[in-house]
Amino acid sequence: MKRISLLNPIKTIINTVKGLFHEVPRKAVDYSHAENWAFLADTTGAEAENPPADVFFISPTACLGRYEPYFLDLSDQKEKAALAKVIRMEKGIYDKHSRFFAPYYRQAGFEVYSFGDEFREECLRDAHEDVEDAFDYYMAHYNEGRPIIIAGFSQGADHVLRLLKAHAADERVTSRLIAAYAIGWTITTEEMARYPQLRFAGRADDTGVIVAFNSEAENVTDSPILPKGVHALAINPLNWRTDGTVADKELNKGACFVSPEGKVETEIPALTGAYIDTRRGALKCTDIGPGDFPGKLYDDGIFHIYDYRFFYRNLQENVSVRIDAYLKEHGKPHKAA
Image (cartoon, rainbow, N blue to C red; front, side, top):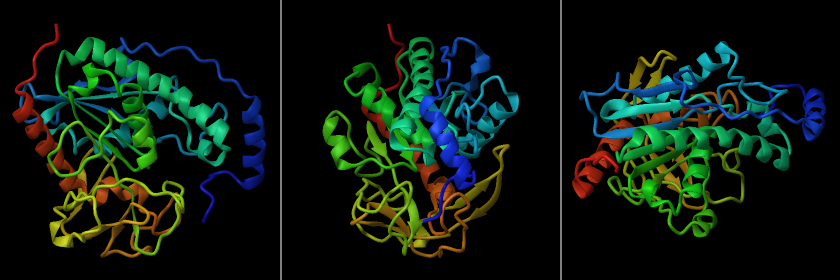
């Protein structure tokens, strides 16, 4: 397995040692200021003036190679712009029937994932404080009883799962949850057992559930996202099954490759079929090989950066399906007292 570090090994070791003694001053981000949101109640992609749902979206890692102080710098406008760009590449999946919210947060830099478990977790916990503060502010000042989708990708998906665990017994959140899309991260049966209020998706239209998968080539047996020996929960975005049933590529309504400005530049219907490897819980792509879409950050065949792209139109459709299912069951959103 290739190193995921973007630094040379010696520098990585040096920074790891530094990190053990490095303490970053933490001052809470004030989410009452619009400048601390990449998107705040944004409806530019919505079909209706008053869309029926909200999306709270958590960005994937945008600061590649970030080390010392290991976090995205919210005073750096270029780093904030990079975060907004990666959000735009996925925003179109979610914003057709929603107001779209996405906070800037001091996410952990990519280099953190090459450090030891204890320090990496410390960095991610620090990053999550911002996510929790932003979500709490959203719930207190913007939600007003509206149904909500919580979504993210990669590090963002990790923060989605942390939010769900923190609010597992919070009926204010759970009763309004349409679904949580935690794509590009691993959640296990053991984790779910520790939070019995959480449910994993079982079909295309169940609500209040977690949707997750990690896509890879058929020959892959290990990855940084889904290590060998770990079994992840997964649902197939082509047939919305959780077993090993193969979904033919004709079910793939469109892989989309989106620019940082949010424009679909290339769309390929029927790019690949997929099935869930019941041993790993990985989503195996049947019609593309490891070298067809280079791994870039990881070994070829680990299609992590393509999780959204390969199944873009199916995910976009599913968001609408789950919103409709929630509204059918619960009725139109009511304003909280």
